[in-house]
Length: 131
Length: 188
Image (cartoon, rainbow over all chains, first blue to last red):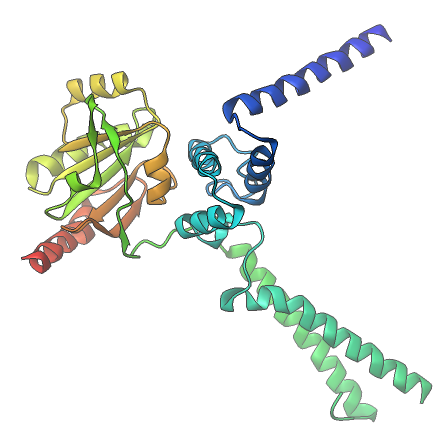
């Protein structure tokens, strides 16, 4: 029992140190800036490891992109400006939410189209059943 | 929907629509399996050099700006001493430097400059100038993904070609040389 409590305490310690480490690398002047940084790095993809966000990734290029985001936030740039910069450098790929444009028409429109078709199909089937 | 088809033909039409949908979806998913999930940067998109002012890797008091890279078509080599394939291609970079007149500008990424200086002192320095990008600000501004990466610049500092990964002699002769010569002709 006491060993279990010890383990839990140890794990808590690990969590606390991890949070401290994250704060020390990118010290911000306000919590607003820190929130923006956290949000941006979670909404962007690591460009060389597609299943990780920038926040999760530690490869050199992800660190450098995070540093670039950090400096831009300190300069007072807003979320849209920073995202536009990242998009210009690394394409839509870096955004976890792809923008709506000609290339992504099928991506965004497809589900709606199928939903519409399904509703129409059900509507007809119901009509027939009644008739 | 718009047209009402009843009876046997109606059922066949339904079946056909369903089968076609399944076939279409399967095709899309099959293509998805074979698609490359990695980001592939555009290799031929023209792009001006970003603005920067970074220390010279061999003499850190001196700052290098994009002005230093202009005047004639040139190569940019983005590398690091911790990057195995960069180290492996160093001999080839030396050969290119000795065999041709094109300036090679280096960008050392996230590196210990003492290591870089030692390495070049031992192995020879093919770089006309070498920028130390310790934080990776230039690398991000260039849109580089990983080391090594090669860029071909025109005389005005516009990037014409991007090559990811180690450069081979064949690739250099087939793609880089003709482009450099073409860019020189254009500039004259």
